[in-house]
Image (cartoon, rainbow, N blue to C red; front, side, top):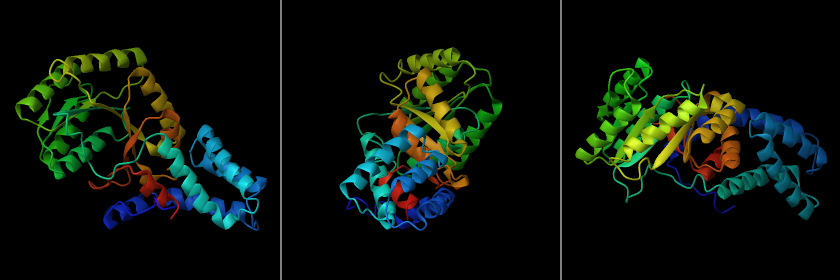
Amino acid sequence: MSFFKRIFSSEKKESLDKGLEKTKTTFFSKLTKAVAGKSKVDDEVLDNLEEILVASDVGVDTTLKIIKRIEKRVSEDKYLGTDELNQILREEIAALLSETNTGNDSEFEIPKDKKPYVIMVVGVNGVGKTTTIGKLAYQFNKAGYKVVLGAADTFRAAAIDQLQIWADRVGVPIVKQQMGSDPASVAFDTLKSAVTQNADVVIIDTAGRLHNKVNLMNELTKVKRVMQKVVEDAPHDVMLVLDGSTGQNAFEQAKQFTAATEVTSLAVTKLDGTAKGGVVIGISDQFKIPVKYIGVGEGIEDLQVFNKYEFVDSFFK
């Protein structure tokens, strides 16, 4: 299809290809077995494909949508060959992602009419939340934006220390208080500081607790309300960070967080260490929330803007 044109630089593309290697290898070894000895796509091939997609953590509902799309093409072309299956899958998954208005960007950019642009980051502990914030700060800083970080996860001293390390590494200012401080107070101070410094981007870390949805909801609502005393329409983006290597557990976390607060974007991390890369497709489809960033390695450059065409192209390369 003509829309599969080169968008990323060769280095960026190489990093993405490498990050999705495990998912791709597992997926295609299963797909090769599923079509072995078959010359055309029939019911048995489709049944096997369904199992493979579910096993790749695409999710049952999204898998059924993809199968239905392929069945439609099979019925339109009675002699659809198995050698064409890769291309058809590639096209149909890209088309499905297009419906969620996700993955259209290729660069780290923010809206020009919001200054400072405030991103509130949520997610359970251990998903790579603080690392994602650090890498995001690096990319925005590299793109020429003035960035300020806010350490509003005040329930763990380690979270504050880790964010400080990233701020030092990237060379951006951080606003923090003592462990146990009111998170809303930290968020307020961060925005005041950002406005004074004429910053372009503010990234606020929040506590990663999900044991009590009501408490989480109340806390995040309070943080938002206090931020709006400084920047009227803050936060402009509530980003949920999910660990892609947890597969179906990432779906569950997305369900819990979207019930507790209004999530406007997703970052899916740790895709390089897993064969569960299909989770990006399923989460994007099921929650209708744009996937903005994906983590495809441990390096500082390995947080990438999610672009559906490049992702699908790497997946089916």
